[in-house]
Length: 82
Image (cartoon, helix red, strand yellow):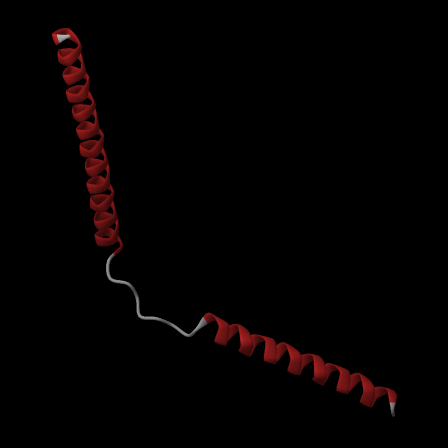
């Protein structure tokens, strides 16, 4: 009976130690990840000022293409009417 109690206590301690090691390793990995992100951010430097919204530029480009298409059709139609 005493052997069973001692064995159970030993297993419990081993499990606690293993859980503690796993938690410590996870914390170390997280700290390393934070450190790498910080180092990368420092190496990249200050983020540049924001330029125009890409969707705005894309919309303008589409408008220009549409305008060119309409102008081209207009030229072709005026040439056929002559």
